[in-house]
Length: 317
Image (cartoon, rainbow, N blue to C red; front, side, top):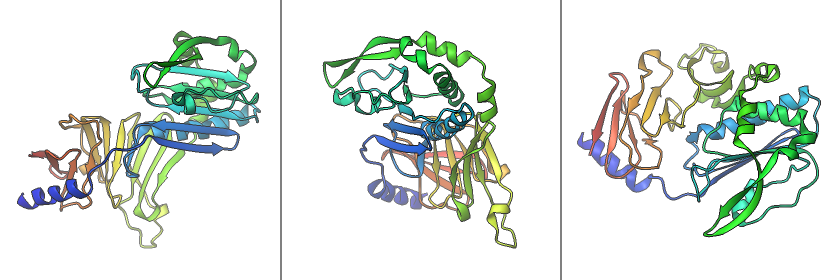
């Protein structure tokens, strides 16, 4: 145990997460553009589910647009936090304007419309992929009357600065999300690949409303890892995952205090494990595994040693 403590002291002095800037991700899927802005930005091995969702939405929105014969630009703009009111959220379904909007609001700017395409803009802590796809479908089919559904609201930035903004009512958005769609039900059957580490043998995908984590621990004689069978762990939603340095296990956090350990061996897959957490930083995994143990931490006061064979968690202070 003394070795673990010394190792932990080294970790927190050399590898502990530091203050960070918001994470911005911009992608294009043919005529669909996505903009994602999140305060969750720590390292390439620690990824929030909300970041994965916008990639799923972008790719499946392209499929919806193709099936509906819509070729103009679709801007899907997403911001996960609002510093002046963490509980505020709003949706904007807008026609004839595929210009950025959420991206520059905190600068006190509303960019002029580019008079083309349409936009689905979302400010919220979390979203449901299927719901957003319904909004995309509705926006394409009803684009000529979209702007008539917008109502004014106030957006605050900096200290006491404010902007007037047109948004959709929550009642209107909820009604669309509760509606049924044959097209959306069809397209969510497409598997969207989100991570493929190749010879590291780990994979993450999304299909039919579920994230699928896969790890291949079988080594075929031919050396063709892509044809090997993956062991999967499926989950509808989660807060974030931590991929180990050598991609031999995942910690999948359901929320800030509960996680599941998954390494591709069914007998090692844990039930939900609870940890203490009084920090907003996500947990990290140590670089190395120690036989049947991993170390996780998110502060410099204590850490956890998890034995994945015995499914035992021990807190070290």
